[in-house]
Length: 305
Image (cartoon, rainbow, N blue to C red; front, side, top):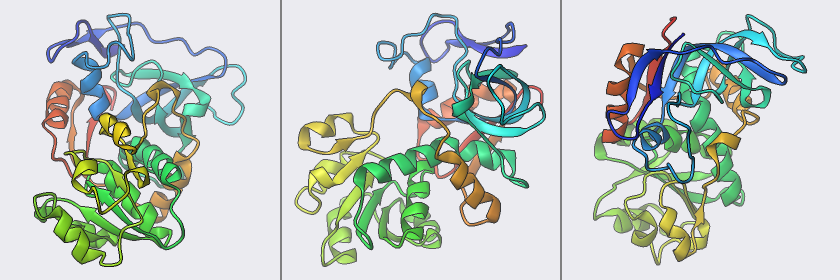
């Protein structure tokens, strides 16, 4: 099958090739890959930044988020069948024509949901619900989402506003109308951040979720207690008392993703899609992700699509 393999760590380490299809096995599902979502984790793995944390026997197929169609199920999988549309996390690597993964890492798509939107929501839906759970805000809280226009930030914002919280979202000025559309009060990233937060929340802020970094935890010192901030990007912020939402990405499941996909199918939850690249332009998609400052998700079509 067609795939990209990581042969050596570095920006030029991925190469298109032909590899054998992965075997299904008990409790696992084989999926024809139709849509692939690109995440920062992908180029960090490619570049070798996580080689100690996530060691790989090279060459290896990498990539995580997929949407596609079930080709085959292994023994013990009773609730999926060939032909079912699914989305989730690929154990065998997403940058390939076919992927195999554990059943608990997939969710069946609701009827009528666009597979591109499903792929775009996999990581953001799982991460958003996990970090909100870590923050555990009291009802009707006033909360800051740093990087609210990004894929995870916009998912967090939508879930918080739907739950009745007041959200102040940081983003560049070009994205402020988008944040208003999501139901958030926009604030700037720059030097005016502390003043913007005081103006938007004169009675104080109850907590924050940091999806963008840029020394956010230190910059809001005195406005938001560090122990009421969850960050997914600033791993040094734990020393300041913030909650760092780390963990092993290979252990993530799609348990919480299905509920968000149901909302998306009803039109009550969405994700921006920045660009969809053909499979042959995976390197361009990774370079665009590494450049940052995205509002929407980057997708790559599977080689059989």
